[in-house]
Image 1: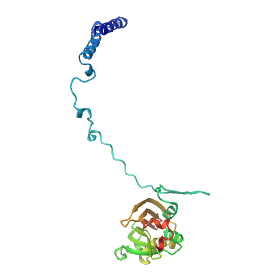
Image 2: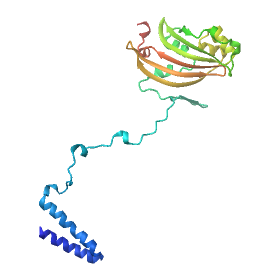
Image 3: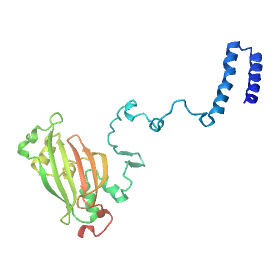
Image 4: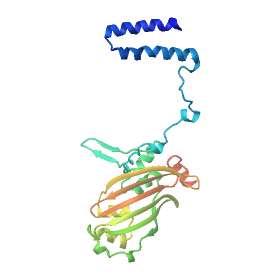
Length: 255
């Protein structure tokens, strides 16, 4: 042991002389090797252990999550809407489609007020609208009172049928902003798509959400939520396509 201590003391003495360290600091430094070597000689296995025992639980202690500063709440994100751009020789429709949506589904889900026409072309058969529910006209103001400042709002539920088979379940909230639109919807009972066509208007289309889920009966469905807008009528619509097999199997309609 002494053989190890003397060289270290000599080294510290040379270091003090070279750096001109004060004597008290020299004494403090020279005590270090004695304490270190004494601990090594008496308890070699405890050289790096603490003087007080540490329990296993304390060694694995992690600060509870609740003690960390709370993170600020994430800002609410509005559903991503489509971007429909065009130029002299270019048209581009953009939307963050779910990965499982195929090409024909993207075409149908992009229909802007003419879904019946698109489905009729796809199935090669007429599409009819079966009203299921609508806010009674008797509970609403007269059509002549409709205006942008005081719109008349009607809630509607319809089925789109092809070959007597339900293809789409549609629910909508219709805001009527002119007497003409109110008359066509409330008095003449036009469907939404036909009403836009009669008025000769091409509505602004905003596709808000598209998702895929499964019905309680097991069918995989696709749903879209969108908005149609003109100066005379604004419609917020949700459409459920009853079975995605309609877009993959030619014989689905008559199965």
